[in-house]
Image 1: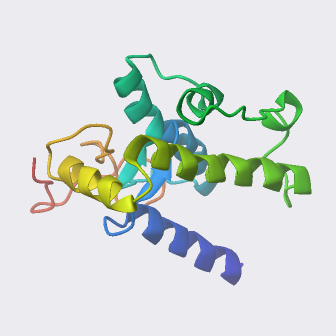
Image 2 (image 1 turned 135 degrees about the vertical axis):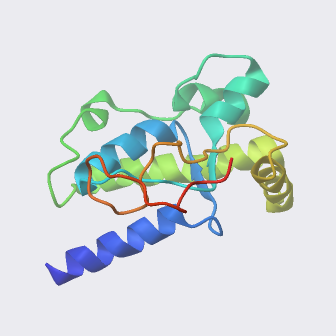
Length: 165
């Protein structure tokens, strides 16, 4: 309905905005699931993927969130398998699922502070350096990615719409 389309449009605009940084952990998987749910190929800009950052700094191969939480914060993250593998496609989500997702989001802020310090200024400076091409773990749209919100499928690129390198 109308509310669903309004919400979809707002979400697509938010994800595609370079002005709004998105904090994530293993963001590629989330984007793939969201693309499937929205039936479009998303282009997500200005993502700070803490999994990539932590893996690089710790010289590890993409550690799970609970491992980064323990290493950076010294705290155990409860990752209930029952909730982790519950049906996240059913709507509305259960209270336990909402709590689980909220805890994941909350711990990302704590991990970012653990990696970048208590001030967000360092993270913003790092993010700016990454956006300028002098850092890592910043998602840029793939060359073959379609613009935000376009329905899935192949489309020809119009002349003059080529992306700059």
